[in-house]
Length: 246
Image (cartoon, rainbow, N blue to C red; front, side):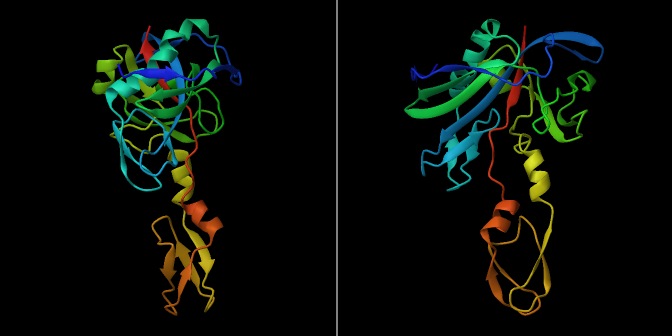
């Protein structure tokens, strides 16, 4: 395990209650007992220092600011995830803790707690009972219909966290956008704007460069900040979940 030094500032938090549930879900007709742990993680990029959202267990990921590759070894994930499992019995449903810790000299902001998987959009409980045991990929909220994802815990994670069985609302190496599909849905929708020179209507998307050229008058113009942020939304710390074998 990597050495970890916890900053004294740790505080219990009360997460919004929706429904108190037993930690049991049913897959393919068979009851499976889980310990449901919620996580929200953020760390600074080791190259540019800007905040990076860790929205799932990934062994590497690009910094969205400087595009450098961040290495996130399995031993680091063990250090980040194990506290929630160790403190699980001390939490009531929808209770958790805010924490700041140092791992390999990097300060991380961590929120974890005991919570059933919930929709990132409306916060209703996800219909995990309706997901087949071998399903990996999209799933939909039964209340608002928004799309999120679920996957089996990757083998490398099981090697360091042997009780890990399934993920919800999390990015994975096979589905790196799994945690942010709600934001991507909106960002991928085309926007029509008027050329500032000739007034022609132009369609822009997330693939349109910041300095773009009007196809009618060949004038270059700079997409304004509000539109650029709409096409490239800043990631938020969306809660994601690990189901551990009880």
